[in-house]
Each structure stands twice: as structure tokens, then as C-alpha cells.
Image (cartoon, rainbow, N blue to C red):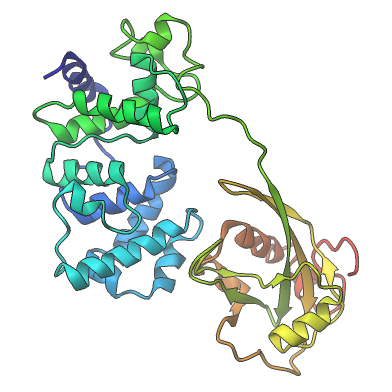
Length: 367
């Protein structure tokens, strides 16, 4: 066993995390669920989602048998929704093609939808004690700093060097604890900002600390301009409910309920609503805009409020449905759409926003 792994294991026993809700079990389903939820999401955010998800879907069979809409509803607010769709697809694949038995090797696990090499290795190590290296964001940061690895970790050549280093450091035993130790060190001490170097077990050997390059390693992603996109959405209300549209399975907010998007070239919004939704409405009013950052772009969203009459029904395409505002908590909604509906239903604005007169919710101007 290398000196690095020995020291790291000793540190984890004394100072690592031991009480996370997915620890203490080798159930691959629970481990898989936690690893998928933890992708690009902090532990404190994941814990309540993980607990609610397990209460509703306690095993692979329950998840595979559930409608995808129920899965998306429980995931709502956690972000990166492709994770939920892939989780559901993978559960169905395991149930239908593997007899409900979770794959037992990192190679086989990596073939599941939404599971990459590092995640597969973590699941295999925790559930089946397979000796496999991981290379998530925490581990990349730890290795770059301690061993002085230069270059942006997202570049192929740098990543290959890091994989080779990670594999060379694997211990012969206690692989699950070692993988957890790597995660713990990066999450609790060797953090991106303000790392606690004085408490690190590698304080005296860390290249980044020795050379005064803690903030320089790992190297940052080369800067590029983040594109901005703008969109308008129709907030159509009637009798305390709002009209929502099921998004296509793929793409932004795939499979979630969202407000109907107004085409950019639409000049007469009430006429578009009548044609698209089969509803008669009053004049359109702009609500307060909001901005939402995605991984690769920033969305500037302009919600537009319209009051629908009861004279006409919905267009019969199956994608549109009314949601009572009181039931929005359990609906599969993207975060910015939930913010709009939460504001719409706030006690101080509820009566004004939902009343037929054209005063609306914080109206800015008629459209």
C-alpha cells in the first residue's frame, strides 16, 4: 500500500464523514442513487431529495415501474434533469434485461444510461469492493494540488495523466473507505476556495502549498463568453389555476411541466394563445423578468400574464393541462418556473394576480 493511501485512510477513520444517509450500506441501488444525485450537486442539497426519493421508490423495481412524470416530480428543483430521466431508463433496463439484478462490475455499470467511468467505479467500489479508481471534481483538485499536476483537468491529456495517477495510488484493501476518503478530503478540507491546509494530512508534502500555488491549481477552465438567450413564456391563469405544458423528453427541461413558450416572432400574444391553446384571453401584461444560469448559457426569461375566460376549452394535444397553484409544490417544475408560480401565488399578490381585471402580478406594461 502506498504512503499516500495509508495516510489518507488513517485520516478518514479519524476525520472523514461517517453519517451520510447512504453510508453503512452496500445496496447498489442506494449507492447508485446517491452518486447520481451528487453529480454537480452539494451533499446538503442532495440529502432531503435522496430521502424523499427512497421513501417513494425504495428499490429498482419500484423506480422502474413508476411513471417518468412521478420521477421528474420528485427530482424537481434538484437540476440537471437528464440525470432523472437516465436514472429511470437505467432502472427499466435493469428490471427488464438484467432480471432486476444490478450490474456488479465498473465496466458493466458504466454501460447504464447516465453513468460515466468515475461514477461507475465509485458504485463498484462501495457496493462490491472492486478495486477501481475514481476521478470526480474533488479528486482532480486534490491530485492536482498535492502532486502539482499542471493544466486544466478537463483537457484530454491532463485527464489521462490524472487517471494514471489515481490508478497508481489505489490501495490493495479497504477500497470503499479509500474512495470515500478521497471524496471527503476534497469536500471538507481541500475545497475550491479557502482550503483548510493546516488540517490536511498532506500539509507538508503538497506541491501547491509548498509553492504558494493553491489558488492556481488545478488550472482554471480557459475563459470563454457565456452566451445569453432570451425567451418569453405565457402565464395563463383561470380560476386559481395556471396552464402548463409538458416539455419534450429531450432538451432543456425535458419531461418537465413548464409555461408555454411564446415564439420570438409573436406580436399578438392573445391571438397566439387562442391558436395554440384554444383559449380566449384578455390583454397580455409583462411580469417581472428573471435570469437563470444553465451550465452553458444564461436564460433571460420574460413571463407574460394572461387571464383566460371559461368560454373555450384547451387544444386537444395532450401536452397542455391546468395546475391549481396550490398543487405546484408536488409538480415536476423547473426552478425558474417554480419561482414564477411561487411569486404568483404569494399571499400579498394572489388576489390581484389571479383576478380577471388587467392589474396582474407586478405588471410592467401592456403587450
